[in-house]
Structures are given as structure tokens and as C-alpha cells.
Image (cartoon, rainbow, N blue to C red; front, side, top):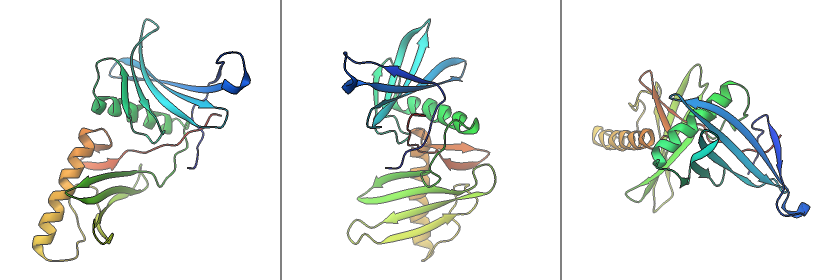
Length: 208
């Protein structure tokens, strides 16, 4: 898995008294709806690590969620009364701010949302320039043959434009596309902005 540099404040955490447990962490703070949050990347000496999304009140941590594999998606709520959906929305908000500020360098090929539905694998990938022109590529992978079929939403507005096959097939795949878009928005993996659907970036990290 390729790694990318994130954050600007390197710190050292010492576990026990040996260098075997030497850990590096990086920290980035941001605001979301008036509350202060932080994303902490924790790495061991081999470069492996995970990310924590934390909320503090009077220096006390009141909520904490973890992205175990640093792929841009929260996996577990560890502290506090917050849903995975809300945690992912906050997490992706913070990651995108860090991106705009030049504090993270993402893999441009990782703006992908994947979902399995009725035994088939689907993916939505936002391609192009996020701040300029972009479109969504919708892919269906047949569970039996592994054959991939591609569809495009050229305006990223939720309507598939180029579809092979008859009108009935078009209607069916359009419904699947809409269903997966809605799920992606609900879980915080896709953002709807200005009537366009944009898959949020997934990130790999390493300490600076």
C-alpha cells in the first residue's frame, strides 16, 4: 500500500522504556459545526498505523473513532455517543480541509466508493479535477463471471448518460446507481454539492 505525507505537527510517544515501542504521531485540528475536532495519525517504527478522530471539551476527549487501515473510512466508535455515519461525515470534512490547505497529498486514484448489492459488486469512482470538471464512472462486476460493465454519469448529477443495452436495462442499472449513491451519502462516503455527487477521497498516510 502506497503511503502519503499528512499533517504538520510530529510528536513522539514512548511506550515502556525501550525503543521497540517508539511511536510517532501526527495531529491536525479543525472545526465542524462549531465544535473542535482532531485527526491523529499514530505510527509505529515500521510506518504502520491508524487514524483517530477525536472531539475534545475542556481538554477532555468526549468522543473517539478509529480508521484502522487509514483508508479514509471510520471503522469503529470507541468513545462517545456518535454513529458511524456521522463520524464519517466529520472525518471526511476534516480530510478535505486538510487537502485544501495542502497538508495531505492523496492518491488521485482513490476517490472510489464500493458496495455489494444482491450478490454483485458495484463501484462509483469520481474522475477528473475535483475543483473543475469531473464525472462519475459506475462499474458493475458480475458475481459469477467477474465481467465488468461500465457506465458513465458525465455530469455527476445522478443520471447515467452512456449505457449499452435496451431501455429496461437502463432503468434497472439507473435504480442501482441511485440506491448506491444514496447509501454513500448517508454513510458519509459521497458528498452531494451543487446537485452533483462526488466520492470523498480515501487516504493513506505516513508521518512527516
